[in-house]
Image (cartoon, rainbow over all chains, first blue to last red; front, side):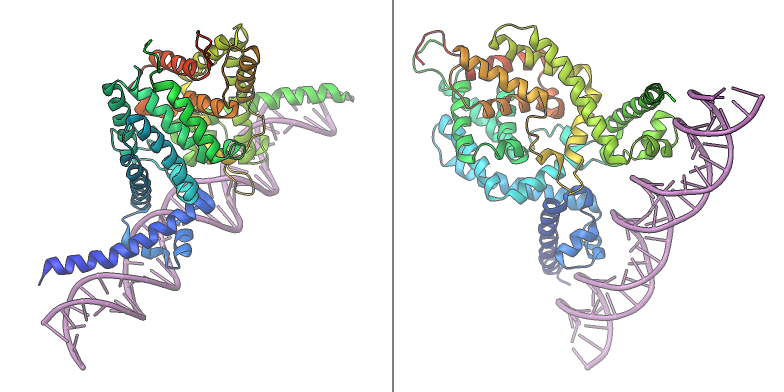
Length: 211
Length: 211
DNA sequence: ATAAAATTTGAATAGTCATTCAAAATATTA
DNA sequence: TAATATTTTGAATGACTATTCAAATTTTAT
């Protein structure tokens, strides 16, 4: 028997179904939230039987982990592609802000689903994901740190604590998706423009060399 | 019959029990999270019967709303007391940062319980609390906006979008309690000092009047 | 001390949940 | 076409959930 081909075809069929289920999970998380997003609800969203989810995913935890990984990969791909097209650290930083906010406006369902998973899912030891110290696992976070470090190296940026600035910036971008009081009051373009101006004040050296 | 005294004594006994239950709810939310924080678990934490919670609170939603209100009131009282002792807008801003971070370090259980409720509780229409536009209901948020507005009025601060800066600052303080990757890497004093320096760069006018 | 009111409990109810499993349906292989 | 493997389903299981309620206990008022 040809194991390789069998494996590939299994993977093909199975992966298609898994992708469909993950897509249904994202839609369900956005629509009714993590708590009510039972396998029954996700299955109904996908038009399949709940037992089929159990067949393709070991358990609900694996489904949510895979959904989270998909969401992180897709947003990172979008943002990093636009960051890489910029040249200087300052421009990369602006691209990071613009792309991060644009992605959330483009895919509000995904932004909501991400929040739902991060603040609801827990490890087998019952440690919440939002408290996990993901050591450099988030590609967006490491990219952001790299931009900041590079800007300081070239002298374009002044001195600051990279971890602190990276955290502030990422949570500022993240906040716009979750805080309706904010997004309802300030439109995305205004928020992006103001955020870029504020970040420049934080990290970019003044024109006059007094620092 | 003296309605006033009867009412007051009822209130006294009942409020004592309600306070005990709310305290147990906070401890339980911190220990095992919102999802597993069933009335049975909260009752066990308080050493009472689950039915007694149903007697003192209309339903679980009311218990969580009261717990949330208590958490917001207590943190606001702590922070605002220290903010009021400062004189200038800049000093008030620094006091806001110091007190906000200090409170979370002083009461990590409360900080966690607050996050758990905000990101899990939903209205009867299934709208998540974190998406609610609480119109000026959060006393900390309005105090922060007032400080920023006052600073611009006196000319101590430069021009900026008050809503955006307030949101960034509050989420930066908030973030330190939830993000273990951050609090595990940067100690509180360093974070507070760096945050104050960065906020100054954002909002305080340069000494030279070039703006 | 007695009656009335408030408080507390244990048990029962009805619902939802993830997961399992044998059987049915479909696809693949020989 | 026949045999085999994979995929899908409906139903069942057991555990946990918030809430209700009659009865028991405690507190309050007379």
